[in-house]
Image (cartoon, rainbow, N blue to C red; front, top):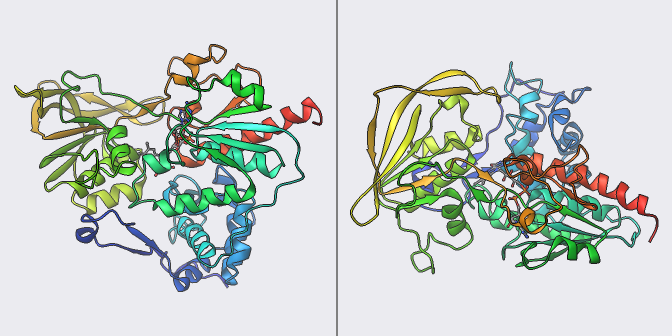
Length: 464
Ligand code: FAD
């Protein structure tokens, strides 16, 4: 009998004073006993609200029923019917917005810790060698190229390969994984977890080519000579700046550069080719996942104070709730309702302070978040040695610029129809290049939807 009144399991975590000295994973996951106890909280609801709320429709109640019988192999196989990235999603998905937000137990007892159960399943299966990647259908003879190796392309590639198409993923960087590798730090998502899940795609027969910049070095038109269709999952890697005076000063970084240098180029190691120097006072502008990641990396690198500057209140922060709590536990300070106005620069061109004003909350904007309204005469200055701008990203224009057939919106995202089809014949797209910055799950959902459409497109072309 399910026992939902037992308090939800949270799993072990490194203590804050210890973890700020290292880049090892903070959350340690569930033990077998904890996982079984948590699985026993699930009511196995007939209408499956958690599954309905999952953008990639993971069969949550079903995999939990396998876990209850300690059948990890059955549980992982169930998950892999719809998602090949469970160890990643179990760690980084904002479950409070999706599955756990819809759990029947949410109000009365607290939701089932579905993310932790998914992570437990994937990790245990990997350690016990129980993960069997799906077997592709008979070879179709069609070839599809996926551009970018972030979650959107990975999900698309896996689905296309299941259908028996030959798939090659082209990645501009030397590391695969997109934001999972260059943006999200190892203390949230260990590199071996990303590598293991990509390895499953390789086992299915998906090919990967790193260090290929599609557009300038290999055009989409050229790709279409070799491939029957193309999926663009090239993300939103162009950082947005704040547009304030002084933001080009020495000591000001975009979160994108800061995190890439740490995650891909080991800038935390003073012996690396590109070490990052940050001083005793670091300011991070923004309230999303990038801002939390940058602040927590800065805390681990520096010896002093890290403060997040956010123009709304905590309730409006788009970052995962757990990561905001983690950042607070790690001693990161927050200055809410604060608007950045100018970076003050010394005679050497180095930033030394941030001029700000106070704000109050007004009416909700188009996304439903209350707008910040500047309070007149409330100017003040915060001293800073380093300032990291983490206020958002947009698609890099490299591909559309080199491909005039691809139409873009004013925001730089690609114009797509409801079936993820671009304005160029045979080219589909999704993920952050469509949404301009969203979540891993929405990027995956786009990749899966596009794979279905690409499959139909190829079928219409006739057998090869
Ligand atoms: P990306 O992950 O950006 O991958 C695109 C890939 O395409 C990159 O590897 C890029 O190098 C490659 N590429 C680009 N142009 C070319 C080209 N011309 N040729 C070849 N390759 C190219 N979401 C969550 O759900 N949870 C989180 O905790 C979370 N944390 C985040 C932390 C940070 C720092 C950031 C920036 C984002 C975070 N997000 C999070 C958002 C999430 O990571 C993205 O929405 C998601 O990764 C988008 O996936 P994608 O596949 O569309 O693009």
